[in-house]
Structures are given as structure tokens and as C-alpha cells.
Length: 112
Length: 114
Image 1: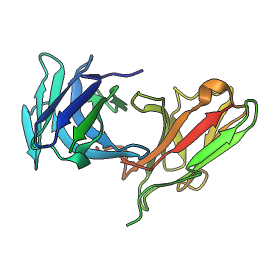
Image 2 (image 1 turned 180 degrees about the vertical axis):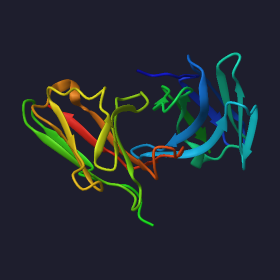
Image 3 (image 1 turned 45 degrees about the vertical axis):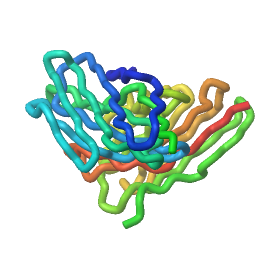
Image 4 (image 1 turned 60 degrees about the vertical axis):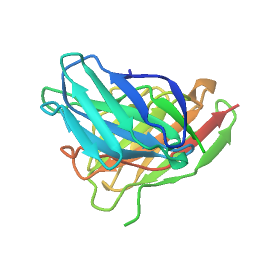
């Protein structure tokens, strides 16, 4: 079963614009990760945010986490055509060892 | 360093036929995962290995699916017999150990059952 749901399901923007995608989840978590998947490829880890953090940055990526709302957002600034991919949030629930559960994904298209 | 290797990349079979997928994780990675990814969805865990031991196979449909990782390195996932609904991408991932956060994914095997 999918723990996270992403919104929007699909997003199309012009190169240079910012892209924001959101993830909502259901249970308390230890951490939340974002992965990217290019068409026909495996997933690539982008960034991790722990439950006691509110914001993380990595290059053009900014992730926020609101544990009270059980939601996270991923912002990609100054998008490039190469950012075209599907983006998934992945959560690890709190309490002992818990498996990582992936969301449904946001399909981003960046138009050159 | 080589990434996670999977083969074949694509497989087309008729229903009721058997099929097998192979995965070689990153060298030194003790934890290996098999995921199922349906079109437009995120990956869903089928089975997780710690070395050669299957420690989480609760989502593996055991009537037709089986997996092994005999020497704690490479792994095989088998479906016998395949059904139309098994058409999907089968992803393999590995991590250094169960405490590692980041998983490294292979390119997947796209299975089409006709």
C-alpha cells in the first residue's frame, strides 16, 4: 500500500520556472526522502529530511516538512529540461525498524 | 563503482509461463530489496533480504512468486505461473545495511504478460 500521496499528479512548466510538489502521508515518521525517476530508469535518491527538521536545501532543491500536517513539499528552483522526471516521496514510519514506503509520484515535465 | 545490475531489461511472455529476474547489488551492500512498480505508481516492496535471510516478505504473493539470495550477494525473483496482472516493472535496490537510509536502485525489468 502507498503511504504517501503526491500532489499534483502531473505538472508542466517552462524551463527556468520553479516547480513545487507536495506529499501527504498518514502515520508518524522518522524521516522522509525524495527520489527522482527518469523514464525507463530506476529511482535516484535526492534528499532526506528527518522528523525533527523543518527545511533542508541541496543545490536547487528545497524540502520542507510539517509533521503536524503530515506533509512535505519539494521545490525545484530554476528548472531545467533535464529535471523532467517523476518525483516520489518515501517515508519511514517511526517505531523500531520500518520499511520505506513510496508515494504515488508527481510527473514533472519541463518544457525547453 | 558499478551500480545495481538487473537483467533482463525487458521480458515478454505469455500467461501461465514462468519468468525469472536477476539482480546483482552494489558490492558490499548487505540489504537487498525487490519492488513492484505498476504504471503511474510508486514502488511497492515485495521482499527484503538482510544478507541471505528474507526478513520481510509479507507482500510477496507466495502462491506464485518466489525469491532467493543464496550466498547473500545476487538474487533471483521468479514468477510461476505468470498472470496478466503481473505486467509491471520489477525493481531491485540495495543499501549498505538495514540502518542505511539511502537505497540504490537498478534500472528495473519491464515485464509484459500477454
